[in-house]
View 1 (tube, rainbow, N blue to C red):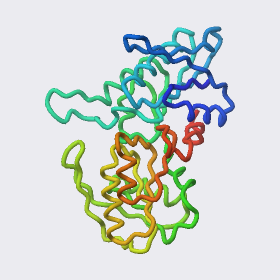
View 2: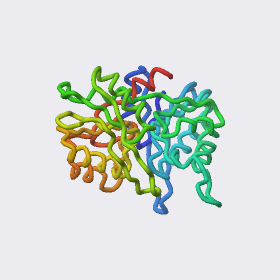
View 3: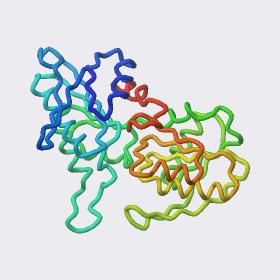
View 4: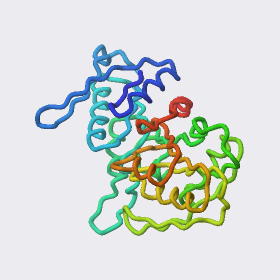
Length: 285
């Protein structure tokens, strides 16, 4: 049985279709005091042996909801629970950067581990986060799927990462697309929200460029990269990311910078979610 969190209903439906498993209906409620309740009526009979909970933890409420869904499975004596985290919130805070700070990725992983037998993550920002879980955890790569919604007629395409850490992602999309070059910007992070980037020596004039990253959150880095590419004479510029968080005015920033299109997966369900991560998740279930 596939049990969807409220943030991952489309992905859960696609995963149910991909695997042939039953898709459960979940009742989501919010009480007057703000507390949440997520209930799974299909578990009431107590004869479900295996459950896959699919829930992107894009907010603190989504984290609480996931823990409730896990506990509903425990209450129903489900024999085996797999938790799929299409997007793991707090995963980027993987160290205590200042004295007195928590390691939020560890705290979240510990909490999630208490109610599941196994965890599957889609392209976590720091792959080493799997070691934070107290149960078997593994990652799957949805990056190659981003090639599918790209135009077939890209001219002399360049797949560009916003920093050297994402070059493997750009190469993954390029390989799936079937042609093109890869390169990256030099990025320096000044603070948690401010970065500077310097263009590489790659020739972009007259070329179509796809900027590839795992997450687009505020859009600041991506929009700066796109603006630089436009200044250097790039023809079409597109943005591709696994997790289209697109917080606050991110989509507007990208449009103002001159992006032609933004494509993402449904790990975070947005208007730009042009392809589903369900096939790569289904392979490991």
